[in-house]
Image (tube, rainbow over all chains, first blue to last red; front, side):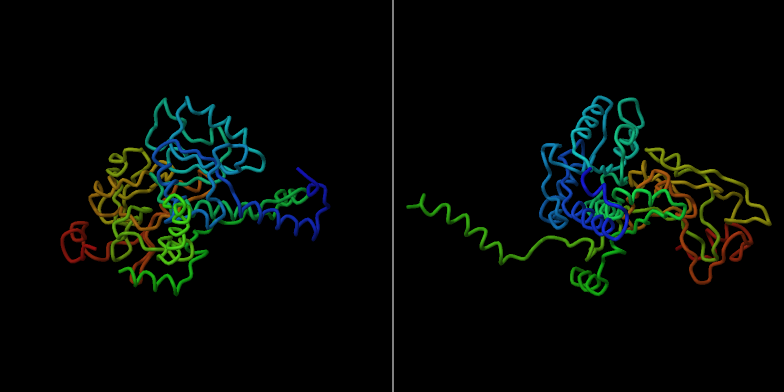
Length: 193
Length: 169
């Protein structure tokens, strides 16, 4: 993409890679892309109670040119499929896709001729998120897992890292296991009961 | 005069909001418990001696509106007993990319083998890993339970498990 692709692998490239990945994951801008009921939960996630702004991504861009994350929220009909693909193509690299809900992930309960059986038939999907619709916590969990994936994305010469025989992709850990502060969790649960 | 103060009033609203309690849930750091009957990931329960409750009847698969469940039954034998009674599920899969968490499978289950947990953090990056097999779904062995296959410890027939000495948990 830029100069960083020309760097030889070593300490410099690894440091640059960390900074680049950190900046990429810290301000993912999702494209406004609600197709069905999942979009309601996606809006709830963006609103005050769940507040996606905490992860630097409250701005749902109305134009794909300014977005780098596509949250496909809802069932994709055969007629909508070329539109989805076009929006994906219009987004600048690097870009990521979350298939939100079972309909986007696999067609869900709509196993019929009108619905695309999984949005991965038309665009590459990074995270599949089950649920019908997934609650906002589930979407935040999927986004945090995507952040985790972005953080280990190799850059330039480091791309060869993935070809090594001992390469292990990082395991995705549930966000509550990864981030929850135990003492305060109990206190809060007690105060609400 | 009112028109002169109107823009300032807007800032007043912003200022007052600073003293109101926040409603934001700080999800990954503080997880608020979901209601106890929340429909989350499934679990296949066990009898108190460790035998599986699932009898491989496929009623859950028939009830499923999304065709997310696949069950293959097999016969219990004296040397290979996984559940009390005649049959057990040799293959049990739930495709979480189809499952809509409606709970019809739970209602259909005649032995209360299939129930739901409150766990919901299921997102993953491949389709294969979201098809949960029996190993992923089976409840862990609690103290006092024994890994099947083993003979029936709590009675002479499956009726004893359902009617008599075994507590229905």
